Image (cartoon, rainbow, N blue to C red; front, side, top):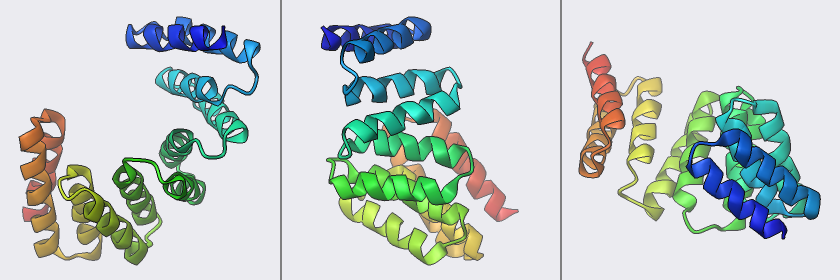
Amino acid sequence: MATTFNGLGLSLRRMGNLPGAVAAYERAIALDGRYAAAYNNLGRALADQNRTAEAIQAFRNAIRHDARNSVAHSNLGSLLRAQGDYPAAANAFRQAIATGREDLWIDHTNLGLTLADQNQLAESQTAFTKALELNPRFARAHFGLGVLHTLRGDIEQATKAYQEALRHYEAEQDREWIQRTQQALRNLRG
């Protein structure tokens, strides 16, 4: 029965009914208090409603019930980074990486961005390099390298990284990130 309510929550969230999704996830959790996926999904719906503190708690509950839930670690890291809690965010991304999930390049990239936020530039570059080893076409990692090289004052390398990111964003037809990357390149040129 808990899985039914979790599935209902997923459907409601896709339809944009966030209060309904939250209620469905809470019902799933009431039926099975150890249902880590329902806690994770609850966290996502709460985050979508800008209920950040509650979302963070939901992700922590998901992890408490399933320490190998890489998605919950990653989601937690993203929210903590957005809150400016960079050390805790970096730890969450490292935990996500340790679980060995399929698309680790995303977590390595998020770790790289978080480390750059803390001015840990060498460690940040290592994370971006690892992300690109795993997925050389991951535009966000190239963009992150552009940010990193910009912070270091290496305009030539920043330009190369942003141009590579732009190439991949154009291939994906991601208008928002095409514009962001073009703006970053314009900012470099002064």
